[in-house]
Amino acid sequence: MKDSLLKSINTSSLMGLLTLFLISFSPITLTSCADGDAGEETAAATTAVEEISGIDPVAEAMIAYGVRPEIAATDDRIFIVYHALPEDTYSVKIFNRDLSEEIATRVLVESSAEYGTPTDIRVAQDGDEVYAFYETVDGRTNDAYLRGSKYELSDEFTETATTGLISSGSTVKAQKDGDEKLDDPIPLVGEDSVFAITRYKDTMAAAGRSVYKVYEFDKEDLALIRTFDLDLSTVVDGGSRQASVLYHGGDYYFALPTTVGEQVNSFANSTPSDIVLVRLDSDWNIRESKTISGEPGDTEFYISNLQYDNGYFYMCYRRTAERFSSMLKIYDQDFSLVLTEELNGGDSAPGAWARTSILATGGQLIAGLGFGKEDRGNNSVITIFDVT
Image (cartoon, rainbow, N blue to C red; front, top):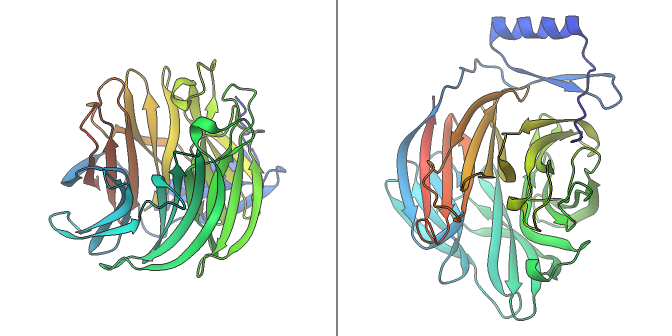
């Protein structure tokens, strides 16, 4: 374990800030600089934030034969981007805001002789637009391809820009150490640009290196601006795995697994791991890191979302204990744990998988839970929760 806890704020100033917080209930993020100098204080909200005590389900809908749901929403619509089966397409279902009516279904990406069939897709919303980055594979040749698109959040869900081919490589079963892994690309909306982040294959034993590849694009036309490698091996152990990144208050918050036990095999769900949060500045320099989830006996991995809403951070990830399950953790401004919930209610059968995507917005949580064949079939359940 490699925790780098920075201590640039002295005790008196910290007590002053805590006192101010208790009086005003206006959350403030305490930041630190990597060299130990005092960092800036970033106001995260200007209105009072009530303490969270739970989440209450208020509406639900199911998508039959649809897996890997990803979520975006506007004031009057909810958009679910997913992998449609058996057609093997990336599609979107559009609902009204309380899920009581399905408005439309659109096909976004079809299988093709050139790029193969869909596998993994992830999205990130930016106002009334959403960016999607996705992998397709050709099972005959074991080739994999990464592409991206931008869509307007409307009933037409019009594609307004594309990246073209971002990268190509091998499928998971054909990869070797050092190869770029294109599955489960991380989408990230920054201040002036949008990012797709992949990772390099390495052993998940503690000696492995956690290195990611960052692609930066123009927000308007998705033209490639630059690419660079991001090595986080100084603060986490083991090879890079599925993760999530949030841009907030001028910094990047990177939530990713770190190995904490002996590797069993080459799969992330069999390698004991906790979750570390790494905060990086706008130039992608590490400012601080800390373990934010380390449940005894749990393997915690595949962080599908890290989001911020109304003064709190929301993280969704997969857990292996007696079964696979999807977990939600909510943190305050200092990443102190506020709430833990098992989103699939503990009904995932042994050996089945469950993958959840979340959207935290306006005091509500929208969760899309995709189930494996051994559980509820290839279906997804979309649930709206009130955060109470």
